[in-house]
Length: 252
Length: 229
Image (cartoon, rainbow over all chains, first blue to last red; front, top):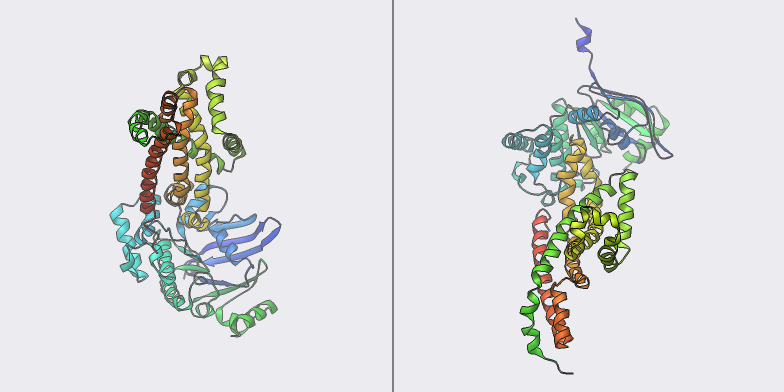
């Protein structure tokens, strides 16, 4: 038996990553590895560095020291490497960030057309397929402002998928949504997880973390405090800070 | 005072003989000024001091002084400089028309660049990030995401400046050009009827302004079709 093949491949690795915003030490010596197909949920109080961490992975933020390697590309100032990583990594934002001047299907077609030079018809066909996957094909020719928040976020997920990324980053994807719309977005994310997508998700949806995540990471004050399977994390948290946090968010 | 209503109507055809020159000054300096404004705006947002510092100084000078003073310096002052008389600039500057175009262009360029910068800054930062996350280059993000949204945001302020430029063209009458204002001044000196003549002139300018407002309203509506109430 060849052990090397059964060993999950590391697709993201952060080593001793530090990030400062001016004087503020946002990330402190972060070490994290993500295997192919792994689903990681990052939680923690606001200001703990969760968003900054995943934004460093596709270099929307630049780390100050340490190494970040994504799918074999080290993130440096080299534009070529940054572009290569961004093609492999899709991102979903808290505020959807759909392009308001483009229709839904145009939102999905823009990057394939510009970056991959895909032909118009082909890009549209692929876009429609993704819109079906997020169960929203009938909205294709509307503008984002005509859609509900939940629908917009599903479009944003489809848009991130249109470049066929190997990894998906979610930055609090349900935090800006009305409660009744949260489930429709989580369902789409759960589907993605079932299909084997590598996912890193910053969220406060603990139900989602419990049912979907392989690993839960708890951050506080720029540090990774605890990293565990969902069962261990929720039932048997090791650190004092984790216990306090869980008590606060699960108490009601 | 005798007020002659018929003179208001009868002087309009004469005044309209200057319309062509007014429109030329307006359109040519409007287009050149817009190009200058785009260049200045890009310099301003470049983040490189050797680009934004000159642009800021330029904008400060041309927004901070009366356009009439700028026009006089260009028309009366520059021709006294020998190397300008000997350079290719002289082709433009020896004609009052060239001086008028130059003054109006330089002035409107300074204002419009700030209007465009306001538009660009008004585009939510997250949209650029979304574009970056999809792998779009900086230039692609600027052309396909920032520009269409910035244009929409800039239209109301820009239409103001276009109308203001149209009215500023009247200043060229002070450097011997016979635009509508220049012709009005000649008629006034012949008829001694300043009220009637200048009221006719106002009517013509108001009609042009009305058309301009309508055109920009249409443009704004077209650029706003994604904003659904």
